[in-house]
Length: 216
Image (cartoon, one colour):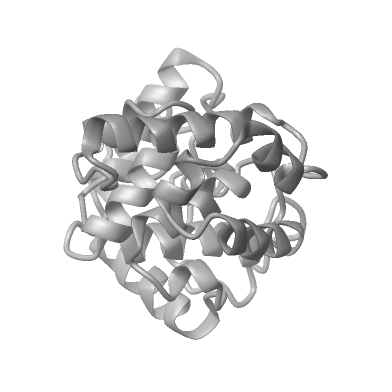
């Protein structure tokens, strides 16, 4: 029977094993070698609808043209869209430009540190705000993307559809409960990579999974 009505409690062993796995298997990506909120924000927006392999060249090209928030804010829209060409979902590029201009106008060109201020930027949703704030500022904000939904659904045997009000509430509460608040950014990256590499949509590597004993 699915645990749809269950009251969940955090399992610190899960976080510990995820972080151990991430230390061995986590992907070495350029935006993980920095705590610059601008660079991490750019990477998160690019990867919203784009695979890592495809987005890597765009990430480097974007930063070559627009080194920081001020450079992006002062750029003409047609140049930003040209740099984005091939990624699709061009509203992402337009929102990046609008957000950069908002940061310059409202925050003096300094990327905001408060979750609510980051969330208020054009094009920034709950996931992006949580990712940036946890990774850069160690804010205790759990991320929820497709990988995290899948890991939590399998781990806790949750059958509620994620596109329902009840599902969104259940997964948001569980993700926050399970978050390692002492290392939120590291934990968030670990569980996302775990879903992308180990607990994959098809043919997950269950035989050598470090969470086999905990997984329902």
